[in-house]
Image (cartoon, rainbow, N blue to C red):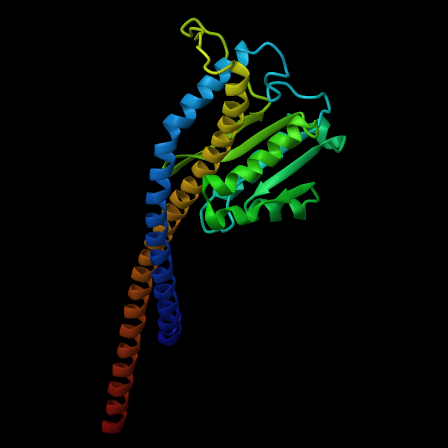
Length: 291
């Protein structure tokens, strides 16, 4: 059994760790509340805009009307891996990295072998992960310093321009979708080319009235819709990150509390043993003096 000094030192260390994890949990909870409000408010707007975009794509007559609906046959793929700049959030970052690797090894294996696959890492963790493994990767880690539509739009526009110019024929987003504080769902979403709305028995084609012309509206609406979709994926990931970190820090705080209870018990047992030994030594000395 460890001596009293060793147990006291460890108890001080665990108490210090518990204070840190508890503070991080409260900070993440506050940030999660704001991030959750942002993603909940934008989802209906983004989903409806995406639905209109899919319907419009079906009604357009040519590629010139919608340059984002079909790609030049370059065969190049861009995977946009969205995770975080920081750790201590459980499997949040690991799940994204694993999903990207899985896509590379299965769906996009031939593109990777032919050097036609690039990765855009949004988040320091993804950038470090893929750079160490010699993938072709670029990054935009600075976006989380001030996450809003104005800072996200230039990145989305850059990706869209690369697609229109034929640099990439397929662009895929991989991110964590926020469900609740304890649950994040890894999503693989095709960003470009725009997928047309799939026909089903319950779906009805909508005949839109265009004012002014269809071309003018599409020219403004499609890029804006794509930027909104990209922004929504980042908001999802941002909210999911703080939910994962809050949950992880909550569990770490609970574990530290349980460990402190165990150490307290060990300390009391060791202290009782030391006191008993001292009493035995005193009694033995007294008996020796009598003899």
